[in-house]
Amino acid sequence: MARDKEKSGGAQGRIEEIKRRISEVDLICAGTLQKRMKTCGRPYCRCLTDPEALHGPYYEWTRYVDGRLVHKTLSPEQAKMLEQAIANNRELKVLLGDWKRESAEAILGMKREKA
Ligand SMILES: [Zn+2]
Image (tube, rainbow, N blue to C red):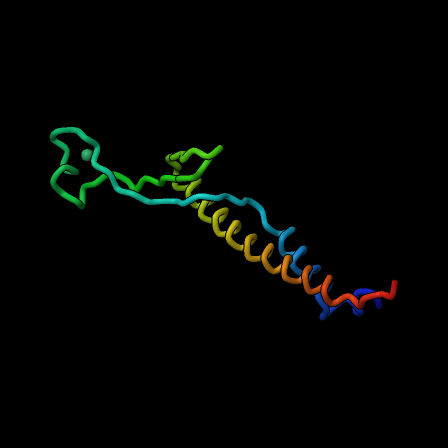
């Protein structure tokens, strides 16, 4: 289409591309994912003295909910999903930054019309 051709290359074309990429983002999550090994606390368990015998891995998701820090233990499957969601969130922030920059360019690049 002629109209699309006209747009491509300019800030408007780049904005269309950003919107397309944002629409492909699925789950987004904030916070951090940590993988830990733990001792179980049982007095005769090998994990007390042998680092190789620690239990786990356990996945812990730390995030803020309503201003309070919340910790959740996740299954390996959930941890995998969360890892992707955190990466998506990071990508989304970059895309939003690009969108703002292109928007400013679109506004400032407009020719001033005589009043
Ligand atoms: Zn143990």
